[in-house]
Length: 449
Image (cartoon, rainbow, N blue to C red; front, side, top):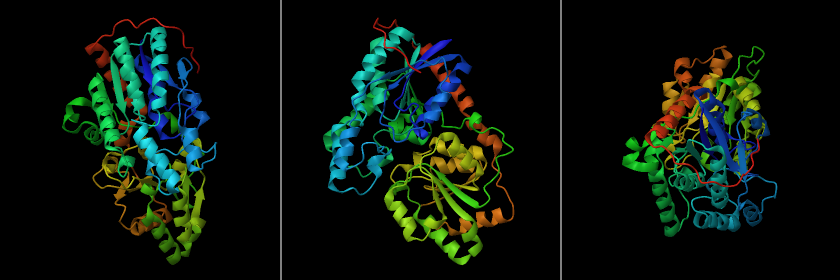
């Protein structure tokens, strides 16, 4: 069995969608003749934690955890957060917070290049050399964000002579939360140089869709990238005759809600429908699983919609899947920012797997809209469009006892097991194109699972 060293920052007990892609690759790679081992951080700055995901790590997968120099504690002190409060993902996209927040974001954007995880670089490289000496992998696989993982992988590939596959879950310098960022010309130029050099150095580049590839490499993307979309794990959706739909008409959203994701027209639509139809008011529920920015909660309350809401906060992945399956309509919100056409997170595919109707808010020509159309899974509406008619239509369909029918054959193309097979083929092809040389001898780093 061949071996792959996976370099990732987000790894259990990290929670949220960022960890799912790599975790499921590691879970299914042995089925295709690849034994993974993992290089990650110890006690990382995770926006959410889900210890239950540790159970999905294969028992024979060696996990090497290293120290990292994290700016999180200083950031919390500067902006007035509690020491135990997690720093949200895409925090640069949030609003408010006063001058302390603006100063902290400026420091992050201009002194921590390419990202706030750059303090992991020396630790990851040093430990990675020892891991390579011990595990003797055939190939390296790094998965971002954060982009720092690729800087680590690049140095390890140069030192060891091993082939390297770089996996990009998101764009780098053109990621949506940089749209309004205040960066110095020096910082922006350095970040672009790192992006170009890292792209050029990898033996194989993988990403989730052609739009992300275009945002990474422009005209060169068609020849540079292999596509492996996000997906869903069939094991997370077992047949369960006792799993019944919610008694009330339920609209569910899984994930964090920032100001760039605020579906303002939805709150208005709920308020209007409730005012005109008492039965709707008596039976409607909006369930949110994740962190909601305070400004959005205030807007919901001002619209008189808070009484219809169940704001559960972050819940374990398995619990979130159950809530999604029991709902009748799933809300998908693509951030309202430049470059949002490329966004197609893993959450979308878990939505598809439920078979429930998806109400999307975002760009009509984006990757997410194409997925909904391909799988006959719902509709996409622009942020500025009224949602009242489509919400009422789905409510009346529920009253009639109708169930939405997705294209199951199309959805089945996005199982994690099948997609991991595509990745396994890419790893084998990369190894066949360029063989590695023996890794340098080093000490033992020690593995923990």
